[in-house]
Image 1: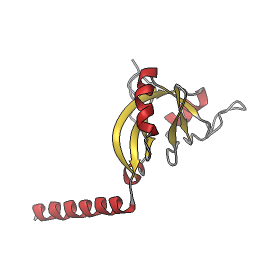
Image 2: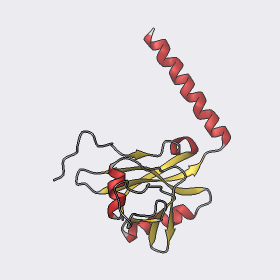
Image 3: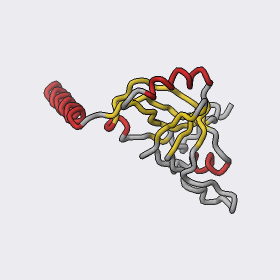
Length: 154
């Protein structure tokens, strides 16, 4: 069993997703990667900004996930923004398909990490885009909570 190294980053997070989207449901799936992509991900250099998952037939693809080329790679280095296949069972994909086809719902990656077995995993979220008013309401709630915490400390 692979041990987690202390200097290894815990994973790549999509920090903007919780601000832009209302998370309805989460699902964990694997990613089909090439060798230099794995090495570059382990170095912690990747970006989930502007990425999303798309269902094509009975397959799910992660589009817009940017993994920069591995610095010590050779001529056969990977393409940084190529679509990457996500590994899910067909029954799980069939369960997600009608939900994604509803207007305003999409699959957004929240986190990419390596589990304790050393496999690369992605946490996908079925999400609905927030309106400007929803975002403003969330900011008000955060401010109110912060004020309550300050009052409790006094």
